[in-house]
Image (cartoon, rainbow, N blue to C red; front, top):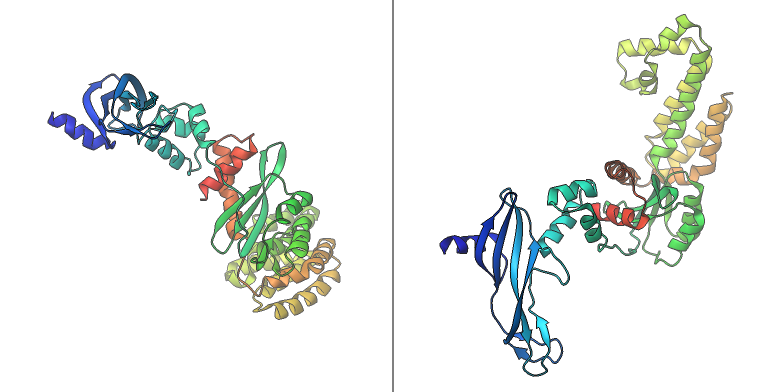
Amino acid sequence: MSSINYISKIINLKGFCVKKVNDYKNCRKIYGQMELKEHKCPCCGHMTSKVHDYRTQEIKDISAFGYEIYIVIRKRRYVCTHCNKRFTEKIPFLSKYQRMTKRLIYLIIEKLKDVSSYTHTAKEMNVSVSTVIRIFDNVNYTKPELPEVIGIDEFKGNTGGEKYQCIITDIKNKKVIDILPVRYENYLVDYFKPCERKNTKYFVSDMWVPYANIAKTYFKKAVYITDKYHFVRQVTWAFEAVRKEEQKRFIKEKRKLFKRSRSLLLKRYSELNEESRQAVAAMLNASEKLYSAYILKEDFYDIMKSKNKEEAEKEISVWIMAAENSGLDRFIKCAGTMRKWIDSITNAFDCSYTNGFTEGSNNKIKVLKRNAYGFRNFRRFRNRILHIFA
């Protein structure tokens, strides 16, 4: 009897009286029934404790001590003495029409906050994959309110028949707000237009024109910021293009100078040691165009130290003129991009918000997608992402 009481305390199911326990090869079945008490008739509301009959139901619980645990309940069916209605007793740890305990369902939902696949979770919980999916399909995240600082970006989701999906984040509080099925401007208009937008003070994105159009049309009172990483990357790409073009023109002997040159040339000159500086000098002496591109790259990196928008705007304007007069097609094109986006680029120097959290979230989504071998159902993909970041 003491062992039965001990088991009752371990399983911790309120109101459940353990009668016996049977062990099998891989599972343990715990038999019992709920405490007898009065129940309210669902038809007329009168209280009754009269039992009509009994029915046995086997439900799955959380695995423990190396066993799959099953609870075998002898369920009572009551009969109302007032209206003669028959009904099954209420069991606090079991939802209607379910064959597993509430805590097992909650644990499965909690496990899905990790980036593991449905199959992995199913194996860990000793249930079928379809059961895990069916449970998670009851989880739903509604459209949220827009935050003070919006970050927006796209990622390659390949779901719902579309290649790219769109992510919206709260950069200030580091939260993923929503996932959209596409990044097209007409869809973004339909999404943002009915939203309450007056509380949004900053709108951060990359250099994707539809995002800029949305910011300028529907977030006129917000400061539109181009993420620093993306406009610095334009300069890096231009420099890399010049380096590759020049390197291809050299004879085999000269190319040896450029072996493993990428990291050396992209690194700030001030951060190089004496040996590295000599190697860089040798490479730059081999090509006048590469030397010009290197100076433009270093000058732009210096501009990134600007303390405010006014200073940055002045420095970038000078840099644009230098790039346009450099004779380097790649930097001329880069200068045109900088001129087009200069207002939102220089806004980045007046505040510290970047899309770093958004980019990091995209990386986590890629891990989820890889572990799951992709998602076809967009709704399930969206809810899973929001669940992970909840």
